[in-house]
Structures are given as structure tokens and as C-alpha cells.
Image 1 (cartoon, one colour):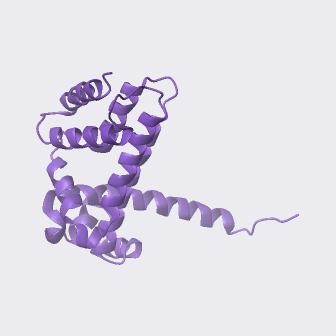
Image 2 (spheres, rainbow, N blue to C red):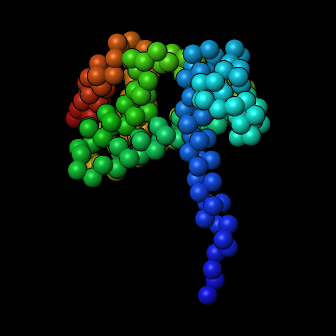
Amino acid sequence: MYSKPSWYGVHMAATHGDTRRREQVLAAALTVFATFGYRKTSMDAVAQAADISRPGLYFLFSGKEELFRETMRQALDGALGDVRTALAAPDAELNARLVAALDAHLGRYVGTHINEGVDDLLEHGTAQLRSMYDDYRAAFRDALTEAVATSGRPTGSVTPRQIAEVLHAAAEGWKHRVADRPAFVDKLTMAVDVALRP
């Protein structure tokens, strides 16, 4: 019978610790990037915010561009995971699932001091992000479309894709015009009700 080497447990614990530390650094980096923008953010500022040494930060990330890409990837992965969880909620009506999904994708920073900064990073960081943001937006619209299409709800003369695009556009607009997340959810609820009205 195969037995794991004696160093295996130590290695796995260290790897798990590195993963958790990496996630903490990325969370701190998001706040720093959103506050100061990509160009004005330094590795020193991120290291200080994450309470890690500068060499420790460079051990995890080769430079600012990689740190930025991984920061935004973690944020977008988290949002998309929450979207899929919301849309898969087994006991929720379609309207509630769509509202929760829109809020998970676009509402998490509404009413916070980094809301505008995160948007600016996503929309103007294309040189560093390449097509990442567009790919995530497309995956989000695809998830909304599938939820509407498989719900069995009649959609009249509009397609599930058109409903998804309208809801996405409405949510994108309102997240800049409301004071806080509850107000954003109220607007989403109204938009979903209107979009799904027979």
C-alpha cells in the first residue's frame, strides 16, 4: 500500500497557507488599485495594505501587471461564481434568481468608496486584462439568457437573450445612480418585473 512521504502534510499545509495568503493579498490589492488606479498603484502600497513584505509580494507575483490581472480575475471569478449560485437556487422564483444574479455581478461594490474605481479598472484596464472583462461579461449574459430560456416562462415576442441584454444594461446604468445597494436591488426588482411581464 502506498504511503505518502513524511513531508507531504507539511507541503500541503504550506500550499493551503500560500493559497489563503494569496487570496488575502489580492483582496487588499483590489482596494488599492480601485483607490489609486493602475498607474499610480505601487507594489509597495499593495504590500503595506496586505501586511506583507515587498519580497514576499514578489514571491507571489512577478510584478504589478501580473498582480493586477490576478486581482481582477479573483474579483470576476467570485462574482461569476455568485451569479451561478444565485441562478441555480432551487426554491427561488425566476424573478428573484435574476435579481440576485444581477446584484451578485454588479452590486457588490455599489455604495462603497471603491465602486467607481473598480469600474474604471475593468473598463480601462484592457491593456493589462486583454479580453478578460469582455469574456466575463459575455459569460454573465449567457448565464442570464440560459436562466430565462430554461424557466418555461413565456417571453412574448422578445428572446431570452434580449431580456438578458436589457437587464444587464439597466443594471450597469443604475449602479452609478443609486446611493446604496438596497436601492440598487429595488431598481433591479423593478427592471426584472417589467422585463418578464407577459
